[in-house]
Length: 147
Image (cartoon, rainbow, N blue to C red):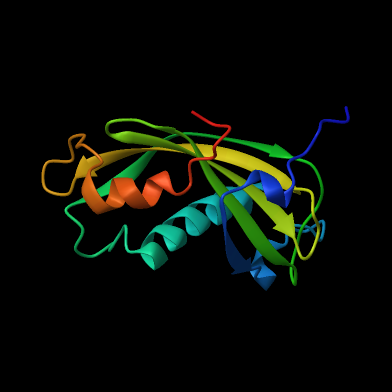
């Protein structure tokens, strides 16, 4: 099955991650669970770098409530992974991120995934609105062709 893959131009911003020796499995390529860790690292690293999240003091943070991944080609140590990030839905308290993982300088994704964050209040752990500066920062990831 030859599915079309996204390219770098399909994403709004990028975050680079170095693979680690331990990311390879006994077959010599990246184990499938590592992809989910890369998605999480890319989005949260991007949020921290942009000032939309301080994991130690933000009044609210995103909890993952749904995930998915499609695998197209192998990656593994010592590859440098560039994660393309975009948002396809920004709701009142939730956001759907789509992340494409690019191996080294390749232009097509090796894997594509998504996850949904529901923002919750740090104290009550109940959903809370995405507002102010965080909403403005997240809006930069909305693609013009997305709604």
